[in-house]
Image 1 (cartoon, rainbow, N blue to C red):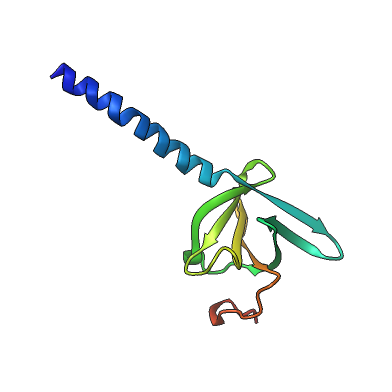
Image 2 (cartoon, one colour):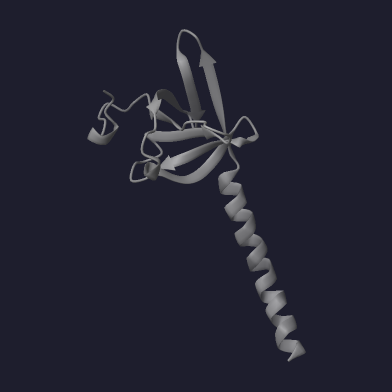
Length: 118
């Protein structure tokens, strides 16, 4: 019985470490944010520039966290549910009453109806 437990630990231990490392490394992707009065706020990721588009009203559209901003663990970037993160991102800061912001890649020309601003 002890041999089975020892073999299980030896075989499953590295797998557990690998899975934990991979889940953390995905979330710890670092995004750069640029802010200027003239150009507004932008996020740069993988050679794509995303411009501030608006405030997210429907929190059910927030997908999984995919990164952080400027090494700040409280400043988070999320995927959009059902939209490509090559085109759209959600940004938010942990804290009381901090809204989530929508960022649109500069190459995007078609906007889904449910994201149209009034």
